[in-house]
Length: 351
Image (cartoon, rainbow, N blue to C red; front, side, top):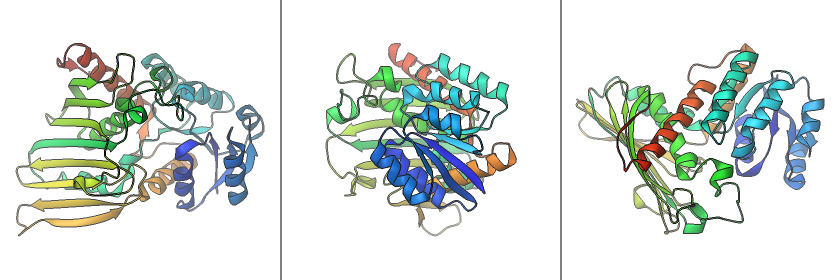
């Protein structure tokens, strides 16, 4: 049995618990959350030990196989270092590694020094719909176009202005940025998973005020295999905006589209949480028309936790997981995208 501890709670706790539920041979053994109501309820349900203070958690939980870090962005660097100092426990950490690139670099060095397994929580790699795109790359031929678009429902103060209900997320000093950090980093990681390394970037951003986090990004990333990928992230104040501009509770319109000279594939994802089925449409040479399939998006959480549990047991990261170095590369590329915006969208190297 792989015993897993969780540090932090917030909106993503329930999805990581869902992932543990879907992972055979893994259990929640301990949880630390400053929200005592949420924390105790989860521990009672799963038979886990509850700690309000994460220092008590680290002092007393010495036999855990792995720790999941769900604290706000500005605490990732500090908490991961404390976990490693407490005994080189294996870590699954929410992105980004740190709120600046220097923190990310130092954390990678610490992970490499300790020899701990470190997995970054980029769950889109584990979504069966996006994995269907990866499988199709062998038959789609020479890739002509890649389009990645996410349009999120939300009023201005929910996305780009200071929001008292989520102060760390809407403060760049605590989050590391706006939607380029919260959403764009996932897309960058997914593109690297599908096509390899990013070589150059050009990007323009938009904010509602000078000191507000960005809510809009329009970028082109050139990959090491020569593929050009267009990345767009935006916000629209229309509730319940779903894939294909259909009505879907939650307000998330995301698609990844790949067009080759021998075919086409597109995945429409209705929510980042995995609340609905991801729709995959494909049409390859030799077919008489398009094929539409649906995949359970919630499996991304179980697949992610399953990979982490296997890594904890084996002492090495699973091949499809995002490593500390992968996460650093994403942080680095996002920084280069912001640099390009400061240069009015000029193309900059991401090597």
